[in-house]
Length: 237
Image (cartoon, one colour):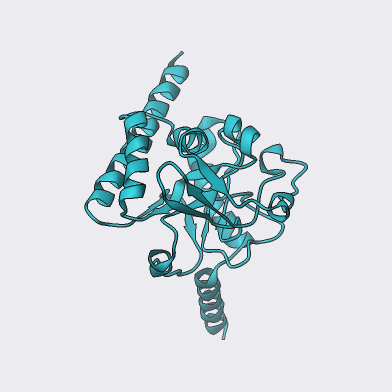
C-alpha cells in the first residue's frame, strides 16, 4: 500500500516537473531566447556549436526516442524525445509550445502530449524516404530497441508553419547503456538504465555513467585515463 502511494506521489511530482519545463520554455521563447531542452542525466560527448542551429533553416530540432508513446509509434513508426530538443524563439514555434502548455497545464506526461499533438494536431509533413524507413536498429533480444529509425529527416508543420529537423540516432543517441558499437560523431547520449526494482534505480543510474564511459569513452574520458596512466607510471619509477 505505502509503496503504491509513494510511487503515485513520485510520478505526480515528475509530471509536474515535465509540465513546468514547458511553461518555462514558453516564457523564455516569448522573451526572445532560443531554448535547448535537455534532461539533467544526459551525457555530453563533444562540443557542438548551438550557432549552427540558430543559422539553420529549421525552427525545431528533436532527438529520436524508442517506441513511447506506443500509440504514436504504431501509427507513424517513430517517436521523438521530450527531454532533448532545440526550439527557436519564433512566433510559429511559440504558437505550438503554447498549445502544448495549454494541454499540459501543471501536470502531464509531456512526451505523450508532445508526440500525440505533433501527430494529430500539427499537420506535419515528413520527408521520410523509403531508404530512411528501411534503415532501422537490429536488437532482436530487446523489443523496445528493435526496429527503430536511425537516420536524420525533416518535416514541416502545415498548421503552425515551423520547420523541423530530427537528429540521427548516433548524433543524439537513445539506446543501450553498453552498446556493441558506439554511436559515431556522438554529441549527446541518453542511454537506458536497466534495473529490476524501484529501489535499485538510484544506484543503477550512478553506475550507468561508469558503464557508458567504459563502453564509449569520449575525448575527455580518454584524456583523464591517459593522465591517470601517466601519473601511475611516474609513481612506479
